[in-house]
Length: 230
Image (cartoon, rainbow, N blue to C red; front, side):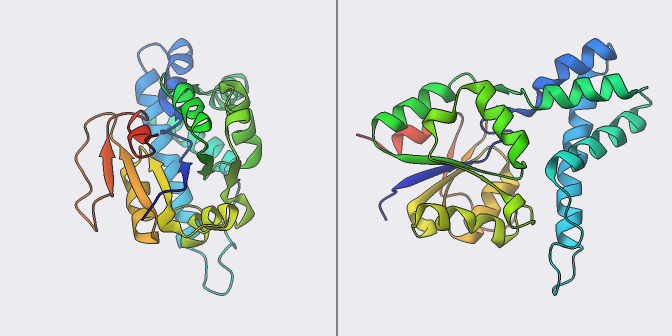
């Protein structure tokens, strides 16, 4: 089936979530990488917890915006590592999360897709404020047709309602949209949903030992361009 659009995950795919480690290292020398890793793990755990724990008749009952879960995850990670995270440190790290560094190749890839007439967008757990800040900081806004937040359905990925935002926005069947994520669990969820998928395995991590493999696997966002060859 011909691909007609591309959707990117934001955190870990377009934006390096561990670029916050440098700010954390300045606050707590020798602990920056550990804080970043613990923060990210708890952040994702909280998204699953609030979505999976909701009753069927009220699937958004426990929903809280991604920014709220991110702050709660930071507090947990700091406490777990025994780091004194006062209000100033917390605010500095939350501000850093709104200005995550994009991966080096991403701007050129988005420009190339625009030049080829490929519609593109973001589909992310991030709430609109967080996404807007990160997209603006990276200079991506003019290159994206949609910035889709699960906040509109109040359920986090991998809930099908979150993925359904993509086909609705583009007016296309999921199979005609390439969903790109560096998170293996997200690539799997998107594959189950019905997207054509590209897992950007930047770190050489092992594949998920569950479900079907992603449609494609690559090592950087540059691999998207081969699937939309001129």
